[in-house]
Image (tube, rainbow, N blue to C red):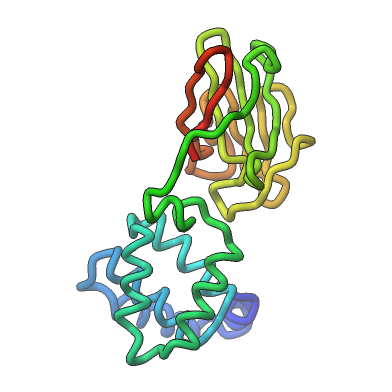
Length: 208
């Protein structure tokens, strides 16, 4: 919710209550994904960046796929026009959400060398940069786990200093993760995004 709406809700709760009840009732017969996509398009039409970011993440949480967002933007061309669509894509690029990257949407990915396996100690976690992408590499006695070092909440890069033992804490909203499993243990409900990896001839490779 924007600061302005939050303010109005505090100073005029009766009037704003009618507004929120109207919004809830207006979409009562729509499935969650359709309702979420319409909300995203309205924010693009108004060019409200904070609202677009908020409702886009909400749409993804409701099960909307990235290509469905792109299709909704293109189908709304008669109302939005090219300028607003380009504006929305620029915001998407700035957000740098893994699921919206061109490689993820087009399937153009490949195996990349991370380093020699001997460079990673068992039980330890290292933060590295690979082709501009920040990663956390955790080695257990059984396997390697490679994670995107961006918080799944809002794509915030998580620095090396945020790692204490096996606990990783996002500096923006304090979501906490267990690097042994990638599971979010506090603050949120989405795990770290794990990347496919393998060991070949003593080298750790990651698919991205």
